[in-house]
Image (tube, rainbow, N blue to C red; front, side):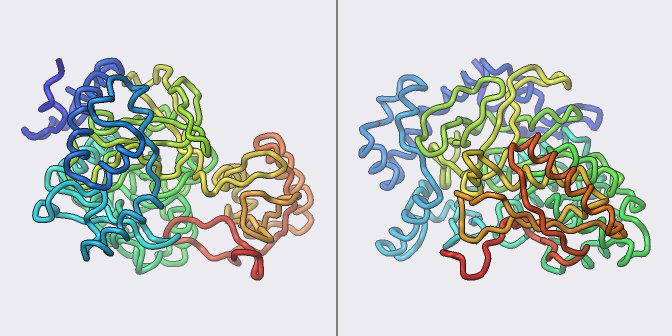
Length: 466
């Protein structure tokens, strides 16, 4: 038996020379981790059933009670939860109770110490409620990730992500402090100039930002500070908030522009967390003691076995979670898993985020994620800037051919070089993505630079639903 106390490190921090923050759980074999998950699943199911009328009605409606779940196949009978389900539960709570915490929230209101939210870009923000115990879990997971990468007490980490109620804002800052490092929570509201000025002032060892914003900082730094960004001494870059950090061409552009080791990582104010290692063969799933990870087929939600190379929509269930536990929740991310041994020697599942299910386009029967287009174009920098838009006459997912791309050409690219470059990009997209685009070229600097998550799809004015 694995004692539950090993899953949260509450004693002294590890020695700086230790490879892992919490070796007792981070080196568990997949079988032993699965044993721990199963032992925690039963109490978590009983907890949500007893404490949340919403979950109780949902389970009763599916004909599944906690005592009926005797194997993982039984567990898969529980319906998948979506953000729209959460919004409806939240709205129903506001209408019935006068507050939004009567949906999936299980802890009493006087035990809730933090409320995070989604960005709300597609509707009303969805609230996430945490108790002090849940905050401790999140802090533990952030410490595991950054410690693996090499961050230690005494290092300075500049956070250039949205600090508002975003789950990667305050929770990430608290996690960095829990590890013992210093955080500089600049955020992005002041734009690239403010971030760069604080880079010059605080000389951070590490930078956390979206890949697209980091490349924007590389582009702006010489004009703002008079020197390339790579000369400021940043040693680690942590990509967050959007796909791209695991794409080879994007990673190479980041490494060159920042002069730093690049890590792709995910996980904000909740229990699903992962980070790449030096092998860059997917993100190591570091929070399996507090989160069950499943894959399902988008649309049908049929289970997908976690075999090496399997791809599907990510579904997560939180374990030993008190505030607002997610039970078979889909954030809409499509991921690919790796189960083969990692060259770094650490055990466990690894995964790569392919894209978002609601961003996926269908181009003549081919599934296309905008992040994959970004990865192809990144290989052509500096002949292109890396900025682009997929231009649609109407919202997807179905796209008329040819796929229209608006692409910024690189600074100083000769006009006569454009036809040859266009042929190379079209061939690369045909070979890698099975799509032949029609490219519209625009001058460098003409497309808006993202400061939050990149928006690569643009619906023309007047398009249905735009």
